[in-house]
Image 1 (cartoon, rainbow, N blue to C red):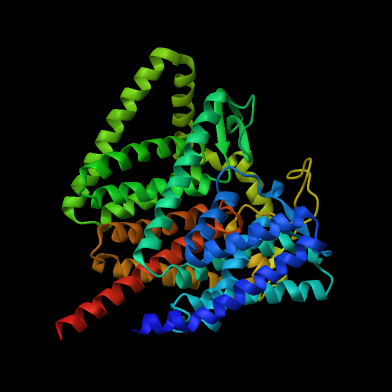
Image 2 (cartoon, one colour):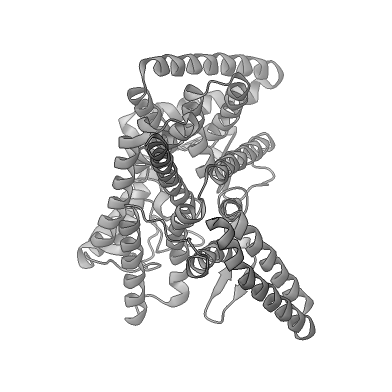
Length: 491
């Protein structure tokens, strides 16, 4: 009855909105060029889709920023003092829809979570520091836009917690993330076999270099989708140890192998460390039968990998042998103390030397987003340079938002981890339980990796982090509602 009343109450509003949109389209058709009219119609279709299926807005954002597209080549609209990218619209349209639904839709209100306050506080400090820097002339508006955009993407958290309201939309979002991961992994595999002769993916596609040693025939691939493949490769083994349906198990198992190869060809040692930490935690946390299941999955994965390598050796022996040698050499450097003397790590030491004095000079709210923290240095700079960039994501957060902003950000992460580790066992649905555990251990794994990898400041990581954390909060809420209904039925 209440639902019928809500629909009747919304009907006049919907009629007014449709008539208003029709009138605007009619006027635009007369006065506006066809190109802008097409964009407007596309925006209207997007709004209608997002209103009913908000998960597609989030998947569209990940598709553009965290798969195989170059963010710098995305279409943009000039606003006089800067440019707005398509991804900006994909983020802010759902936020506007959320605010509009709260204002006009009966019974629709904000879903509050314990993570709201630290995230909003971090966001507020970041914006305040940036505005203050612009006012004082240490940062220009255009200079700030790139990093402001990166921090804005954390707001995907609120899109998830407030617009994803049932299990159907939640599963569609999570299955979509997995599908995007497979897409990225397959493209990375294609790129690997093409090599660095023809680059079909954005990002880094280059011959593997470890220390001062090059590995001809071994291609290192780091597209924007590197974030998705790492998260999915941690998630799939956890799904497998909770999954009981044999058909789905087999599908996920082979998808895991495909994504696993994609993670290997990143040759990103910080990713490999994050992966080991995450899966080691999973083994510690799950029950004994699940530990046994996990070990069996590992054994079968190793057997299939060995068989695959032998088969590949028989057809393209040199290329396969070079790949195995490259992986082994890269892994070996993780266990060698002399690795700290590599040029790639010494770059980070130099950056830290510039960052510390700036942090001591601006300890509370930092320099502001987009601010330069160093000058030109021949040890770091060649070709195009970015004096705002630093490899250490923790130092980046402190540099740009100060210790206050960093405290709020870390509180956001640790409250998330505390809630996940506290509640994941109480979730009855195996799929949801696996998602909460895998997302939690992923965040734990990337925390140390962020010391050498700018995860907190990458536009292909920040929306995914927001979505992951928001997803877990949605799962907690759905289970609370289910438990409440069960208690009411029992009484």
